[in-house]
Amino acid sequence: MAIDIKEVEHIALLARINISEKEKAEFAEQMTQILQYVEKLNELNTNEVEPLYHILPIYNVFREDNVVESPDRDELFANAPQHEDGYYKVPRIL
Amino acid sequence: MSNEFETVVGLEVHVELKTNTKIFCACKTAFGAEPNTQVCPICSGFPGMLPVLNKKVVELAIKTGLAINAEIASYCKFDRKNYFYPDLPNAYQISQFALPICTNGYLDIDVNGSQKRIRINRAHMEEDAGKLVHDGTITTTAFSLVDLNRTGVPLLEIVSEPDMRSAQEARAYLEKLRSMLLFAQVSDARMEEGSIRCDANVSVRRKGEEKLGVRAEIKNLNSFKAMEKAIEYEAKRQMEAIEDGETLIQETRTWDDEKGVTRSMRNKEEAHDYRYYPDPDLPPIQIDAAWIEEIKATLPEMPDAAKQRLQDQFGLPEYDAAIITTSPHSLSFFDQCVAVFPEAKTVSNWMMGELSRMLNQNNLEIQQCKITPAMLADLLKLIADGTISGKMAKSVFEKMFDSGNSAAQIIEEQGMVQISDEDTLRKIIAEIIDNNPVVVADYRSGKEKARGFLVGQVMKATKGQANPNSVNKILTELLTKEGD
Image (tube, rainbow over all chains, first blue to last red; front, top):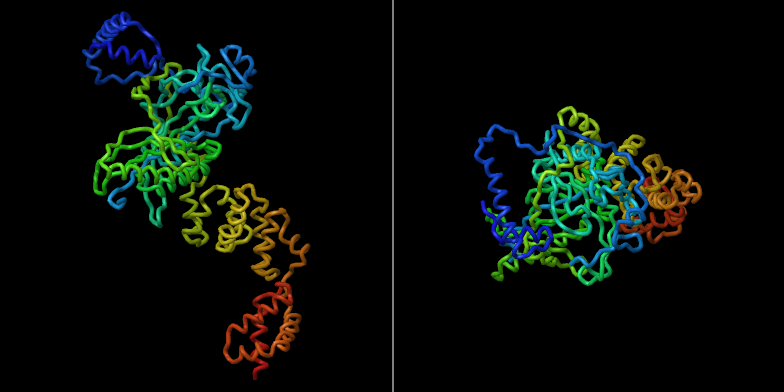
């Protein structure tokens, strides 16, 4: 499977990153190589193999439903570029 | 025109599960708190934070699954749904895509006296997003404000099959689902607080057609009424578009309740591409039969079973049983009242009549009512033993409803005791017969109406407190005797 420039542009848009024309060509080539490498797996017969959804053989890691007080709002806002009246403030969305 | 078409509806219902804390962190889930006061580094998406699943969420999801007759997965997991939006600080929502916790459920609804089964495709756990506040509308505002209190509140999204054929059926399904959630005690299920939110997938097709039409997903349905109106509007819009030869497109539309129309949300050309993949931070969940059994044992009597019991045990008509079992509070009110005053049909009549009328008038729910089941039972006893008439009881009931005082107390305060003493009544009635010779003659010559006038006079003379049965008996006796 080959990734073309159009596909790279689509992925860049989904990731909200700008890339140059030169990078588009580079990434198309690199991504194609990555896919071809992974495609090797298709040569194996995996009919009898359970799909793996998680890398560790652990299950049911739970927390009890007990409240822990949330940190002070101002501490959270220390990391926010902008805030106002107790809200995070963000640029217009649409 | 519309006879040629049928409407096809499927509902996606987001249910806020009733937990103390969020799904992946220990922040509170209380409704209406100051903005950003129930937020921590996990739910606000700080880098490197690890989510840990709240066990209660899984238990409530299983419980809901049992209530909607679904299969509970023995193995399920969480996936990341990727998109950028300021109400989603991680830029992905943790949800279940490939392996949801519940599949293949159903609910039976009543439509126009017959039962219909609505299939449920799946129910999956996920985290809620935050809330955005705009100055004006989202497209004109200079900036937006973000409150992350709701981010990470646990949701169960319940997705029906497109099995409903009208807005009424959709409403019946949503009401039934809400009542199941209330009975199972898994959610507050308050539409006005957003603890149930509903999107409707609406399409139309010519009758007899197998293939589904092109659907629109309608958002912003904040009440049962809004949902019904939006589905009706949208179905009509699609039918007209097809008749006019237009080609419908699959799209998301928003309901404008004020104008009563749905409007296209005009998503960007770019189709949604959520790039779901398993969340590596959250190990999968295994659910064994013992765990399911343990939860099943905590499930109280559900509305369908309760409805059957009211018919079998108390001989109530199906209609009464259906109304009483619309909420667990109403059912418990009935059960408690009947335990003290066993004439079930009388209790049911009062609940569906006076009680329901007063609750609606005051915009209250039965659990907020000052009249307890025992208080209603006491009032009904006073009618049954002749202390007060049914008519007096209605006025006593209203006073009880407003004040929370007992029937006996109100009757005493108002001097409302019914006059059943026959000697007293006989004296009053004899006097009225003497004073109205013309009316009495009319009655004796066959004018039934004249009798009503005499009864009215007795009631007037006794300020409505005469026992109507005694009045009738004595009136008949005296009118017959003096006619001889």
